[in-house]
Length: 136
Image 1: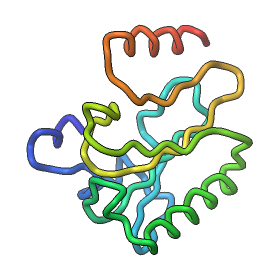
Image 2 (image 1 turned 60 degrees about the horizontal axis):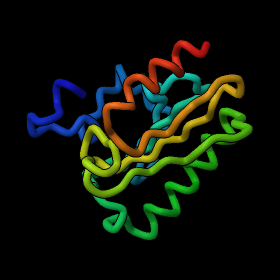
Image 3 (image 1 turned 120 degrees about the horizontal axis):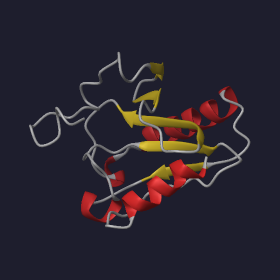
């Protein structure tokens, strides 16, 4: 991502399939395991539209339906007993996003340690992640 952010390239539009190994591809979406999962997660899966979309208001009904189908597919495929479906929206300043391409994350904690979904940036974030890593 560091090679693309701020350089006019979108890493989700031109997906590096060696890094982001596709699990499935549908008409509108790509799904892969996050190569940089948050600490203490059993699974951390990313689903992103194939076309460049920056806002949930720009998704069609067909895209929403297909997204729901992919979320259910991943939960069943990886036998996830619980977790969260995270979709940040709006300006990265308010959603802690690092890139401006709409995407969904399925985050399943390992069941033993504290895990988080991040929605804000600030000075407390780095020490919090450090504590989560040290918890193990």
